[in-house]
Image (cartoon, rainbow, N blue to C red; front, side, top):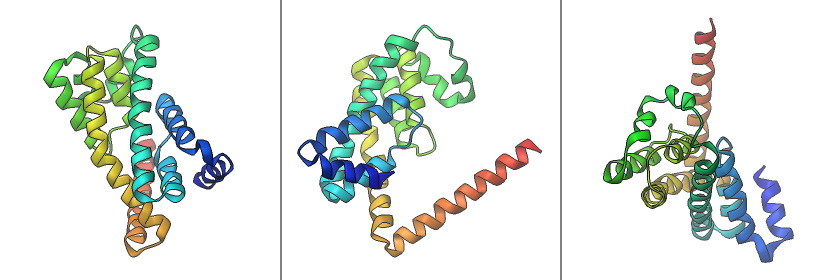
Length: 183
């Protein structure tokens, strides 16, 4: 997928930054598509630091756009989806400083889906400003880790190989865990 994005950037190189940000917004709005392939394409096309900065801008803008769209369209819906994530569920009723720190901490946790944090924030009582600030700040360390990992994998360094082995083992663990639940 990231090769296709890189080719797309090459074809429209004058608009590559804007296109990258738009792709990140689309990924954020859908909420279930991982953004690492966009980060990878950005790093390959723009270089590590510029690609990371563009990815950060795209993810921050994407989360804000998704928040606004979700708030418009989903706020009145039931919170049934939220029941699966008790820690994230706490976010529904938080406001002010409490909401800020909770969103920030949830953004820092790699196993909490970003789209879920955005969705719950949008249907809850969190103000737009609190969400935008906490979400953007929380994305900094997560995106730096993601960018570093993607860079190491694309450069095929020993760290990249370790990352791939770790991801592979994690996926095997998840598959094994899911099979045990079904049995």
